[in-house]
Length: 107
Image 1 (cartoon, helix red, strand yellow):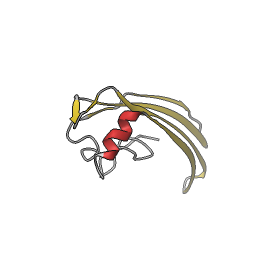
Image 2 (cartoon, rainbow, N blue to C red):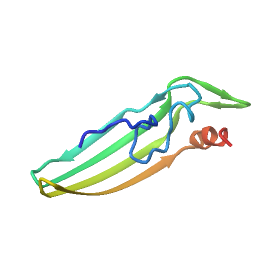
Image 3 (tube, helix red, strand yellow):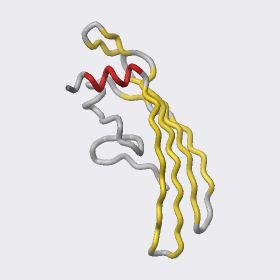
């Protein structure tokens, strides 16, 4: 499965971080690691994303620097025929206090 950026500029499976709304034009760094097992009928991938702001951000008295959090995505695909593709996925976001701060600013 190719990882694609969708029209709302989200970069992960959960769409937890929206750019530029959440980052307030500060940019997002998203290095990730992908491990996969490929087969004609079954494909499994494990992605680990590490999110952080590209630039230091001042939000009132709160300086937001460093990590926003880590996301883990597990996806399994089964293709019993050329026209049928079944997917099962699980994602978990491990947000830091910094993630809470940027989400609070939207309220």
